[in-house]
Image (cartoon, rainbow, N blue to C red; front, side, top):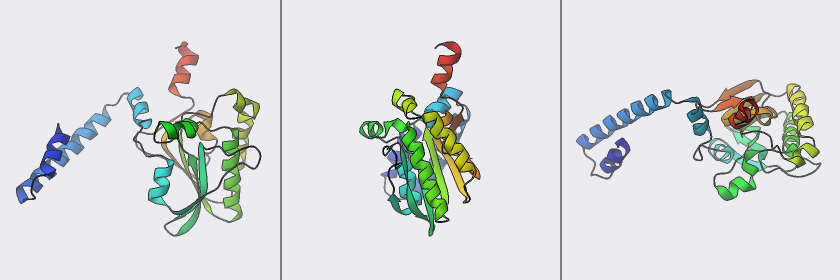
Length: 222
């Protein structure tokens, strides 16, 4: 209702009275939104973290960085499109940016495997991080994944080993690493690229040892 009133007022000719009323409605909207989000249930918070309009990796790259040059492949098997990474400039400083990419529409989500990274994705990520270390570049990591990909091919190619290897290697990196959980931080899928000097979370992001559906399946067979 408030949004409709705001939209209706916005198209009216600009007058002092209109501007005052617009400001009043904006404040009411901010108050109502803050109250609504303060009463979210745990499941509603999960839905907010998964909202399709939530910014994804590519959005952050476009808005925060310049001169992004994407790097591909793990040099062993394939290029996992669920993990995006490359050099970029942040406020004039060269950094390495790595993170999960879910995709913004159905076609992109399928192309990106819905953000479920496979072993080659984690191996690509650590390859890029070691490359950043070689050139003394800081690393910025964006986390947004339900989990690592649980398919048979992931098991065959060593998903557990890939994640464990990354945990060990990231702990020894000699350059600054900043990790930001932007949406979902699900299980080992998140942790596999989430070891850093600073770990931050956006408001209404989630970070858990297992996706809620997986937890329900194990504990309650639901």
